[in-house]
Length: 452
Image (cartoon, rainbow, N blue to C red):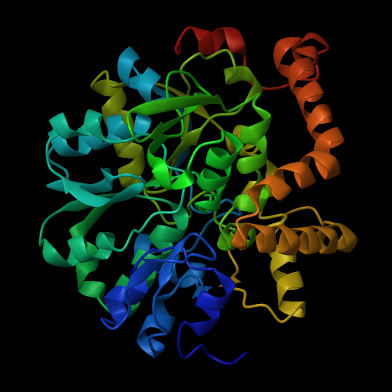
């Protein structure tokens, strides 16, 4: 395979994740919002420097593990020191966070314990725009936004690392961290010492902005009038809250609303999400996400699942517990897989789908992590059918034909949606697996003594 000399294939395929590594490597490159893909991507092709750090072209996980941790990944799940369930002991912070509040508690700990001079995290700018900023005080933490699921411009991350010769922590999604470490390891290794701690998100996917334009259309509202969005908050699932000018808020149930299910189905994911094999964030010191284990579903406010991949990550969890910031229960990789699912943990879809894209002559990132070869084998005809359907729906998105996407989803997948809701009702409401002894997860009664 020939080495990429620029970003033209990344731009044509929509594989960019807007990490900004290319912009740092090549000042001629900047990011812009693509009208077709509704994601941020390079406005120009750049050159070899930009291509050499782009995680939409290649990520060498073995090399980056050595760069970050000075060791190779120790298992298919990456380097792991310990795995936990955790929840903020601050009820209001926990409720606002939806998934346990651990990320905000970790930021507060890093700042108050004088481990970091500042933390790079996402802040709201205006409208749908969010970007990385350096926060320096504990008082700023609770003003940070909750989960952001639509594509945003992350270019400022590396700029902040380069600008401030200080101890900096970073909150990042997996592909963002890949871009940061691609850039640091290849072009600016001396900056590695500034990055004293990383909080990685467990990330299933993100959505292109077609999702937001689609849901606005389904609500008979102007997509261009959308001024803000909050994807979660208030309970474990939370409602999608949309702000429209002037001063109109619409709330949409994320679980039961058909319009939401159409606008935020997997076909609206950004293209690189389909080939991502790093959902569990192999390169972060501390990885945080939602626990979806059967035994934690009693929670009304959310419980975090956390992976300490480094000694500093494990020390942070211990210190937060000792300071009374969090409640903690240690678990094993078995529970991690139960929570997140084998498909995400092992890249069961991503690896074979990447192979399929290559056979079709499509640009596909070279991504081979420690989990390669551990997942179940998916049927080739199933992958081919998905590829054809994805191509059709992407064409409709690019044309802004969101009503056609609504009816296509209903006609082609209505029976599957009904089956999914039935399974949810049986297992979540009737708790059939629990009653019949099929659920072998942790003791719920024990967890109820620690978590809300």
